[in-house]
Length: 623
Image: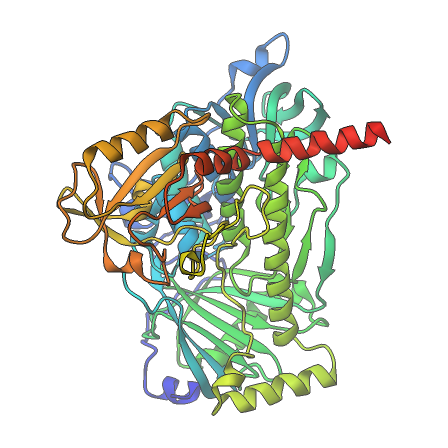
């Protein structure tokens, strides 16, 4: 159905008009809208005080005893920034029993919806951190989308057509809701010291630690840390203080973001237009959010004046051209932005690690920004925990940059290709783009070339030095499918003691051995394997999984058919998969070989990297 025909069929419901010039939500009588008030009016009824679903959005500065200490108090880990990435990092550390200080220069969650698309892998990470269910319950779940050229629909897509996954392909959820729910979980952990109105104004990065200078309403004070995580966003103060800058590309185009409150019956899908009739020669994007809020992105062109374009008197006519003159809506939040695909050359600088937007930036098409930041912390925290515990060498921390810079480059490449396709900068590239769109009406091969944003997928660290390569002894032993070393584990339904469960709930947090038991597996053989894994330099927790219909021991998993398929684990009876604490595969075998497992674990702890570094140093000395 074409867009104009969709509008004419009355799919947009009328709502009572809201006659206001400020961006506040309906139903709240506020004479003057301050930043803190915008946060309060954003709270939905289920977040009212006293409800079990209360999620606070603004906070009071509380002085810390550290401010009056004679010398800087030293903490194992300090995080700068209480956005989604910094808060998730703190939760991950706290779950491992690590004390952590989180500092933010504000006293609220974010203003404006900002990031809204949260991918399946991010939801799995947040599920492990205790917030997944709350996010999914509040968010708008979606997996389908449509791509239009002009008024005509070119094709539709489904991002997760197969069954058997706990988390959806995506949810749409405003960043302020994401942060509020995460803060609520943070406040349950005594290991986390969350300090608001603590602004970083100075930093000294030394070989043995970091010293920070912080500005608060009560004055400045100093703090020391063994390690510091910079999660302070695209305009990172940490990056500026260290004199670091991004390398990459800034695209010469401007886009309008408008969060619009309206009642509409559009499907819960991602709709993208090339050259729509309401924004000729440009592009547009429509997404549904909770609370009857709709995200609309409109391409403006490089010559657009950002200050003029964000004024309501200019925004409203553009939206009416899209939605129709008879549709009543209200503006909640408006911004104008440009695309940047850039990253730091190194994500680690001594004792300081850059995570999230402070380390890398991509265009929003594909939802790779915040999702990639959550994968950063998923990658880093288990490594930092093992180094702090003295169970892994410092070289393991270097693998954070190696793996996540690889992922950032992958995201930047995909984001750059999307942006080049969406915003062609020459007559030749536009002619190619439009020819592809014309062909896509009737030809499947052309649809694969249409790029309205390759949506976020987790990275597979296929080139990581922590992996142990497959070593089949015969052609029959070769693995197929996606669970190669470096890949994030696929979820699947399982049964435990007669109760339904999910595989990922039994993996992660520590090193695990996923063992596909034989039908005639004995309790003695399992006990022997479990003991050998527990005796390794870092214990590996055995997770046995039995074929459907087996008589399983207490606590063991029973397989579902999805696990045995090529698309998941390509497992046979006897297959053993070594899984890292971040739920990424690091090695796999057709038979559980204790010596091979020992060697793969040694490598996954970065000790192979340490040996390689030492060998390089020795060669340099000899030379």
